[in-house]
Image (cartoon, rainbow, N blue to C red; front, side, top):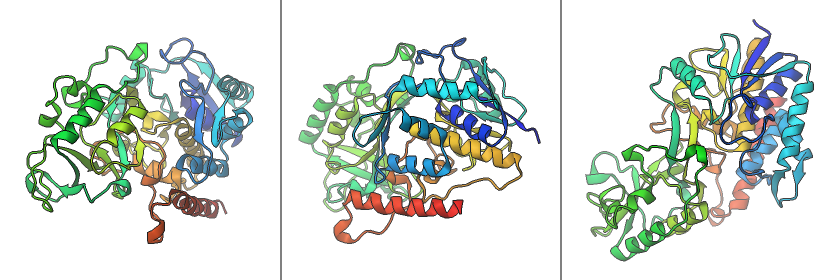
Length: 436
């Protein structure tokens, strides 16, 4: 097979994949359209540029993001090594000097004899072994090529996404199971509101601060059925009660009471540990989202694993297109990595580039590809984004809700630190056994 590999995009995922392949002896053509074609968000031509925050999140192993970093170290991530060398004080978080980090990554790539960095926009998918890691700001021409390959009418270009919460943090003394008019299985979690509770919720919502959009995102059009909740609320105090929060056909059989409004939550993963808020797409600032959600009866102590976001975000429908190895289902030598797969976050982007790089090398060496178990955070993440049971796939980052649970003593079930310690220990043991 061809010993030369193309990687489209020199962001976090593409840079990690390139370095993984280079150290395994493969020749890599790493294509980056910047600075010839700009994205509107990046400010330099460097590889692996951090666009927003300079933090990779927690490094604490009892935290989901922290565990992912430790797994990446076990698997030999190159960018995590560089990040640790470029770190700045940030408590338990791995924050970096972003310019030093991207400069270091760029130098390593430019000086590597196995990597050719090509400053050119790619508009067609190469026929040779390829990793597509073009990111959430993929150019329109290359988007067209991806659409042709996936035979999809569209990619997701601009998203208003609803928050996702952990089921175990919902108070079922208030919340109840039901489907509207008792049709089918009682598969929705319902949080009821009386008039006073609804009016309090509404006042918090209409006064909540919103995230300011980038210039390149302004003027984006949304589908009427996917409008941010704050936009709907601005149309009148009762708009939500006749929309996503309508109470008709939803009665708690324990009380028999009719409700003034109801917030519904829908299952988000096959393990039934995560639920998203139906119709709650939002662009509120995260602190405001937390206050708003905790004003909903039954969600006073809810654990939010993904906040709602509204931003330019190109991603494929990974559940129908990818295997957990990050291979495409229709072409073995074509892989996707990074945020274009539907993973959110800097750490997650690097991790997916790491796995794609390892697996395309294994493919070309005629070795068995690495499909990580769900008990590992990276395995859980890749299985989540490639789960064909997803009806309405949306991007997600690492969190405990996607990992198979561990049994805790009844009195310790709310002990998040103990839960993290046990899940992390299981993951590390699983991963090390694979490497032996």
